[in-house]
Image (cartoon, rainbow, N blue to C red; front, top):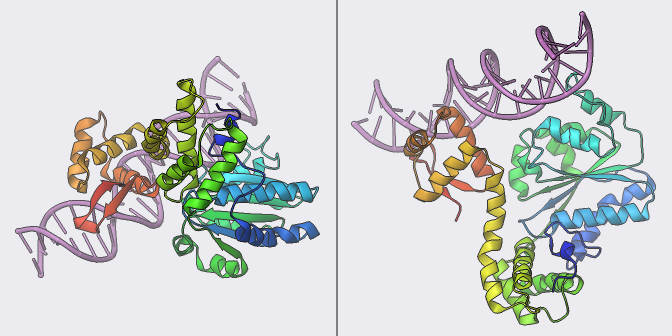
Length: 334
DNA sequence: ATTCCACGGGAAAGCATGGACC
DNA sequence: GGTCCATGCTTTCCCGTGGAAT
């Protein structure tokens, strides 16, 4: 049934990107100066999740690396590396400069200094989920490094630029901004088909079934591929050589929940407790929430800390805060 | 008008980590 | 080994702001 499990993974980067030609061309144009040994234009990729931003960025850089012999690149997920230090650390890692960087020998900006002294082949950095950075000033620092080019990925342009300060924003005026829209059903089917061809046995699944998956995924390729993967794994467990209708039906809620579940697991126990209280109640005002939390937890943190947690949960799209100040309530994301 | 509650920025304290030095 | 120390990160404390309830 499953011939190549890798292509069913969400983070698999195909050689050819399906249905993103205009976007690919724009990105390619932004990166093109590199082939002349000049710094690339800063490129922004905006769009909802599962629209191929990360995939396209990785794919294009891979291609560029094949064409231009000499180029370094590094992918940094700012969700996991949201502090200034970690972001820069990861970037240094991409050029193997971290080995002897240790806390003690790292006065303030030794890290950035090292990047500045970098003197190798053109270096392109992909900063994914860049809106998760706690301090956008890193972008300014990175921008001032002429030997490093950036591809920045985020969901919403306005929200990101609202957090970028004036001087950086004005310098980014001439950057390339590429908008990604949700996939249509046909496009999703084509994406799924490509994975099926490479990853599954022939006849494992038919066109109508792919359409059904595509519909359920509502324009999100990551979800679509997740459904396909779960259904295929189910079929494999059942020793079936075809994916059944039932397997798909079962896989749909799983795939949606999976993304959220993974996020929840990255939270601390206290944060998870808060999230649990909120999901159990559906909607709850801050006062009651804090009370419940104190009841359920051995050594409760301060209210202020809980506010920090809550805003983190909001950022992670696990909960929403309705209303301002006094009238605020928290509820789980639907 | 006053009190109450919550928000969120900033400073400071606390905690864990891992090299330096003995 | 043991102690010291700089650093990054988390948590707490302090406080100004602002809307809602009294």
